[in-house]
Structures are given as structure tokens and as C-alpha cells.
Figure (cartoon, rainbow, N blue to C red):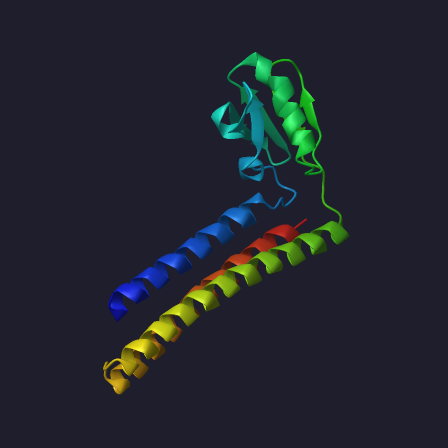
Length: 185
């Protein structure tokens, strides 16, 4: 493996960390109804844990209501049970046709807790970036010891650091956006 391949691999790891962060931030509820809030929720479907979006249609009716329309009426009870078990602070209402969830307004204290949670997720993503950076830097140093020109090695290290700065700025941008969204009443 050469340095370019290692840098490409590192970028792929950083992209993955960024995508993971986006997915986790989407799951954090902001007081607005969003089908993304239920991403990752599993429902018992004939004895098999199955993603909710594979057994039902999930839509945001308005800014405070999510509607879940099961493809099989018998699944309504299971969907309701899964939402209760997820302990998300949401109360599903089953009307026999759909499961509706009304999103309660967030308290100021809860908003602050959610911002802390977002920052924690951002820190995890940054740790992942630093880990990828360390792998790339170690690889460059090893290559320099094995005969790669030292000045070219220094340029590569600077290039790697610049890549990490771009990804770190993206993480900050996502966190800032989510914090603003959470704190907006």
C-alpha cells in the first residue's frame, strides 16, 4: 500500500464518521415531528426484529404529529409496543387504522441536555478523525524510515492535517446547526 492509498482509506474512514454523526444527530428529537426520529426502531415482525420503516409508512403530518400507517393492521399493536419500549418520551395513539405520535414541546432543561448529547456525539466523531489521522501519520513516518523522501513526507503530513481540519470544520458546522435547531422554540 502506498501513501496515496492510505490517505484515501483515511478519508473513507472520516467520511464514514461524518455520516454516522449525521445519522445520530437526526435521531435526536428537536420538538419538531420528523420520521427520522424513529430511524433504527425495531418492531417484532413474525418473531424477527425488523426496522419500522420496513413494515410501515412513516410521515410527518404537521410539525407536531407523526403518523405511522402499518402495511398490515395486525402490526399496529407491535408498533405501539416498540415505541413504548424505545423509551423516547413519546406516547403513541392507536386508532385502529394508524399509530399517531404527538410530539410534546421540549422544556429548556431538556433542550440543554439534548445539546450536551449532540456535543458528545460530535466529540466521538472528532476522536474517530484523530484516530484516522494518527494511522495516516504513522504510515507516512514508516514510509520515510523505509526510504521515502523526508521533505515529501513532511508535505504529506501537512496535507493529512489539512484534510482533518476540513472534516473537523464540517463536524462543527453540523453541531452548530443541530444546536440551533434544538434550542429554537
